[in-house]
Length: 142
Image (cartoon, rainbow, N blue to C red; front, side):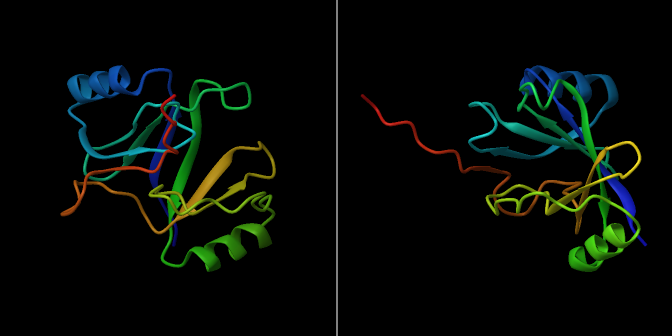
């Protein structure tokens, strides 16, 4: 059975937003990730130990500030994807890069067009290894 374990918010300032959620609700930072979509900021992942809250600094016209998607943890992503599509979900339009992002595949709810993340799970505590990864393309120095 799939379990809701993840909520992603598109934010203007991930550091300020993370400070609010850690101070107001006691969430703990579990991971940071930077890529070409994050506009030089860190995507910051927080958790209460059960739900993972992603703060994504990726605002643009097609991804406005606010709730972006929520995620279902599944044991087998391929089977979860097949089951969702068989139930009427709109299949993914692209393959996600394997660059440290925790998302594995997205579908859309067929009735409300809500983006749904189907993945094996998200961090709810800091990993034993690196707690951040930067895969953004280096900007050449002029």
